[in-house]
Image 1 (cartoon, one colour):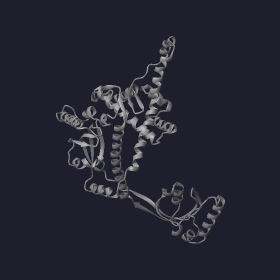
Image 2 (cartoon, helix red, strand yellow):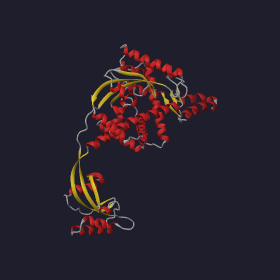
Image 3 (tube, helix red, strand yellow):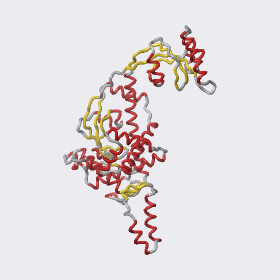
Image 4 (tube, rainbow, N blue to C red):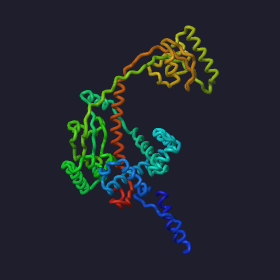
Length: 443
């Protein structure tokens, strides 16, 4: 349990053991106990945290307040967001994910610089906006922690070459991007027939309101959607077909802007999907890189060979090459790089920075056929011979990498969404405020 709850209970129970004359004095000294908005497993969300989050949302909608849902609905949506954040932070800590004070200090300094402020200036700006610096720091820590938890799921994602090939084939026949919005009516894991029927009636009612023109899709999302992005009007942004769940991709490809798909039953509940805009995918620009063909000789520095000995040896080997010996022959005889010695020190073709900046500077400073002076890297002492230089077209390779990343992001989103549903379904959550007060655990 969070330390806040025992502290409150201890402060209250201590009055029972005070002499009568001391009770009044103790009561004067006690500060008002802050209200609890929700209990989330072993943590609490305070009413002040909820109020601050609501004020931040209201500030984002300044001049558009009529687009916000009624106070009770807004409070529910914001509180649910805070619950999800608290659950994710707790899970990240269980997995050993930590954000150091130094990292937070660096991030705050960067934010201040981007806004043309000093850290003290940022502190003053936050105070003027009604946000304490400590609260800002805590929120930033939570945000970075959640990002790292999400990133930890990347290792679960696999994108096959076949998936990349199929995506490229679709793109070649007229790739497009789609701007989508959605409205979600959530269902709990293991929903009963009655819960499913209620959810279906609600999503059909929302669609009916939209179709009658009583409310546009974005406003309905803000007011009714259970999705974490409800307050953004359910906007999902621009997505290629490979970023759209396969269950919807084909149907969306046949829709016209403004049309709505659904209601459809998805893993999180019932959903409406609206196609807002369509545009042609931007073709990847031609991309070339400069590559170099290089041979090298390496002499290592280690317990058996000190710095001076290694330097003397590399000087001798270079002198042999400059004196007329074939570079590859000297490399086969004397290089201590076992990976390339059998190939005469041949490193093949590579971009200049492939082996680090120090190595790259030596490569780019030579002419074809040139022999470098001995130079030091972490690996030891080197002498290199630049064999050639060329321009290579890597457009296809770059495009494959982009497509692989796109498919990976869609899979990551689906995987993480499932994780959030499981996390929320397993959590002990009790609301102490609003229209969901005293909600039973897991709902």
